[in-house]
Image (tube, rainbow, N blue to C red; front, top):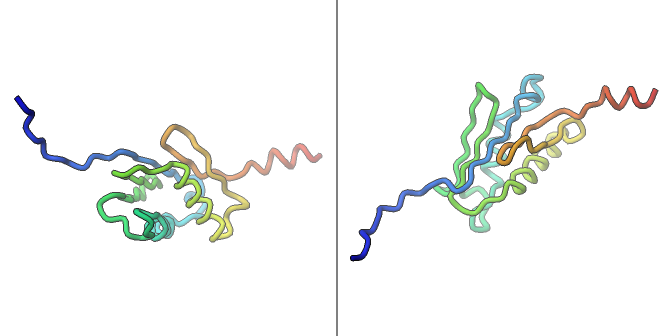
Length: 121
């Protein structure tokens, strides 16, 4: 007996989180600009800015986190690339780095400059 056709509900294949709480606490990083940048630059089917239902970007202002959920094959490395591009565009790349804190979470952290100054002395 054949199986009944199940209704297809789009499930999230990939869910990535970018935590920008440390730079946002110092008022150096603007989450709204970053969300707009990602929305304009993420490519779906070789077209930038046309995410449709395939990629969802949500921002949590209280936790200073940005969540990218995709129903299509999506690379975490691509998010890191776009984040670094945004930092470079806003001349923050010299002070902030992108670090993977777990399997599907990136954190934006400041470079540890104080430790480098102690090494020079």
